[in-house]
Length: 468
Image (cartoon, rainbow, N blue to C red; front, side, top):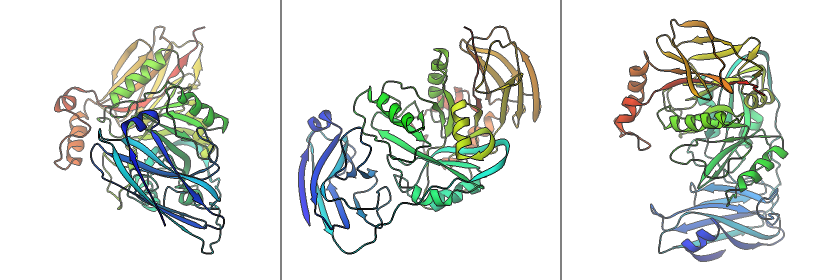
């Protein structure tokens, strides 16, 4: 057993938010155990992870062996098993590093102690499970959640429980984006099926911005330290054929890096009242500036230990609905990138479809003089059309299954649709406050926000106008 003591300061944090502590691993080692001890406090939060000798520094392609952020104070890595969030397999001899994320360090600094134990008992080297490629035939609208978590990062619930929650919600696809790790795939790779397709995901998580990576089997290095590292992230993801989405660009963790060539933006995260009007405004500004950036949504649900009943603050709130030629991971990724879909408040939320002739959401037309709308489940609410200049048309949704053709006068750059709660507003606010169970409003919300903020029930992707 080895014990290592260190004093961490704000100067260390300013120099690099990641602090590395080396330790030697001799040949023949089949398991290592690490424990971190420090005086936790509101102003003292230290994350935990590990890299093996293959690490080359940022950006690395190999050497990552796990990350638990601030969720755990101890982990083990063995040839045949590992703590959730950590990668089992061959224990390479040489210099390993414990990586500490200096998230919050008090003015006086923080004293930490690492305890490291190595073991050489005989163990088989087990590979990670292979990915499966399930598909369900049939074109149509498919429902999913593109952002949620298990105990492989900072949730308390097991992958099996999250799987049950997705089935309960009636989802067709699910992206489990645990923080800075991909070890949740031990469960989700072999359990993906035509009934519920699991989409590969990982949330790149830093102190000043989060982004989701989709459709990449390998781990992506999260150790961004400079604003321009966003472009490194973009390159790493696109070189591997994946999609990059900027997450919850709003309080309390907005995107504070350069804005990269992302494929998507998570415009709606958790209940609408969780400051999503801020991320909507930022998406709208990017579209108005000429970017083609598909909107997606995700609950960011952190699965508890037990299955929760349906409600406004659980999995699939909101739900991303995509039109697919079949249900498969490849089809989901293609539709996400193309913007062939919309985001709605829940798996049973309003259906929102906008088209122009034969062009669907995400497509581009040379001119746009009218659009066709199809809305279900929002009678008495308001349909709003938006272009680069702002709102260009409003209509009351007249019935439960409502179709309307709306003429347009030279819309600028794009047209997209929103459903804004009117007849349903009081009910939605009552359901939200009831779900709080008497607790104070979260996320620094104020009663004035509930009284005055428009509540979107669904957001459609744009139809773009080629004005060249």
